[in-house]
Image 1 (cartoon, rainbow, N blue to C red):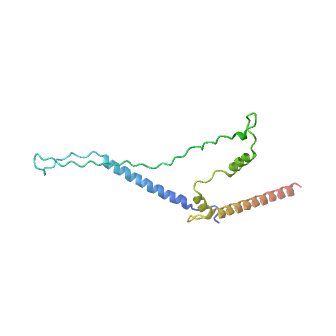
Image 2 (tube, rainbow, N blue to C red):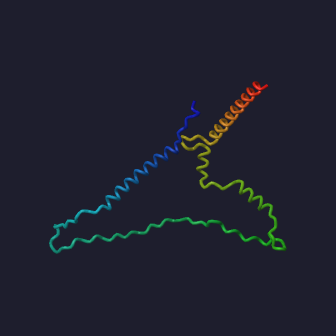
Image 3 (cartoon, rainbow, N blue to C red):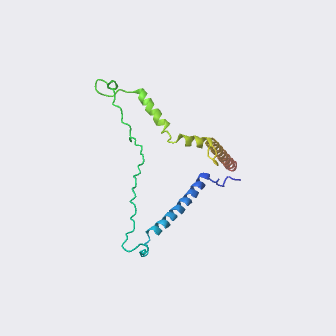
Length: 167
């Protein structure tokens, strides 16, 4: 009877593993940072050079700046100027039924997904350990119908018992 047991979620388990790895790496970074910033001991002078000789100076390192390409797009696309045929002789906008229909259709369809491949993977069960959405929907639908039927039967039995004792 596995109704009351929660099934393991492979994505949550993988996320926990990744969070643990991130925490370990952060601890290692802190440890190395502390080692780097600790005050070094007294500097000792080397006596291997002859007196009066200067040690060679290190060559200066030139670091090239790193630029990342940023794709910019406007927050809202600029609206086109309305054509003069959309206004009547008084300057009032005419009623535009096709535009209303398009706006209503866009509103009802909702926003498009930013990653359609991910949606298709989830719908088709492309991830290892996850069932397809259609299977999950069918299980949820059958569970709802079963519980609704059980509730109806219980209510029917209560009403039968009530009428039998009060008649």
